[in-house]
Image (tube, rainbow, N blue to C red; front, side, top):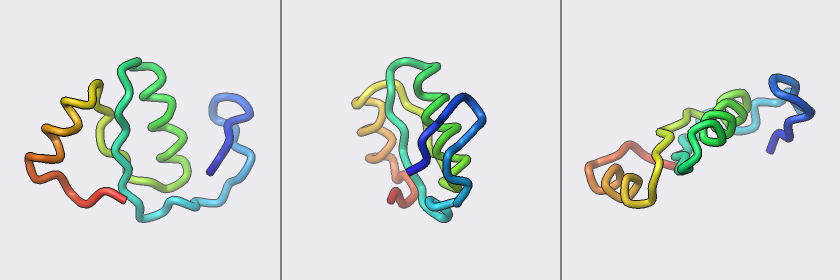
Length: 68
C-alpha cells in the first residue's frame, strides 16, 4: 500500500493495485476523496465513494461490478 508523505507525493510509485476494483465507504466526504485519490494513484479502479454501509449494501445488491 502506498503511504502519503504529503498530498500528491507518494513513497512508492509502483502501481501495486493495478486492475483491482475497490469500493470506498466513508461518511466524511474529504476523507473519502483522499482515500480514493490514494487508491487511484496505486492503479485501482475506485467504486464510490459511498457514504454509509446501507448505501454500500444497496449498491452491492443492485448488481455491482466485481469488487476485489
